Length: 170
Ligand SMILES: [Zn+2]
Image (spheres, rainbow, N blue to C red):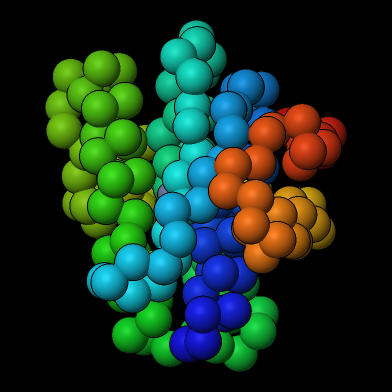
């Protein structure tokens, strides 16, 4: 992938988090771009202030990043098994965050494909997919705001600039 495509991939990853958190009524902080490192693609991160919200908001929101990135690759014809694997690998920090939430709520570690329960990463990814797909227009719009800001040298984007809309929430 080109640097430009990697930038779009990172933007969709963070946009997926932002939209899924907003969907659950969670307040987010700035989204920061870390630049293109020696390891390859430019990565970014979303700062989530400490607040109280539904556990599923945090856990599903954590799963929504790479799911949005993969959905973007699917829609643009860029998706290959290797790229899907790479997007999954880059969401390691997100899995750590989801594991913390699951341990606090259920007293058990996050599992991977072992059950259809909410304490399993596959369940969280399926819920994240539902939000990402039904709110794809918003994910794409937020991603384009991030791409524009990062391309013009703005490292950190305030949540107010994203005009997040939690409409369409169930
Ligand atoms: Zn992430």
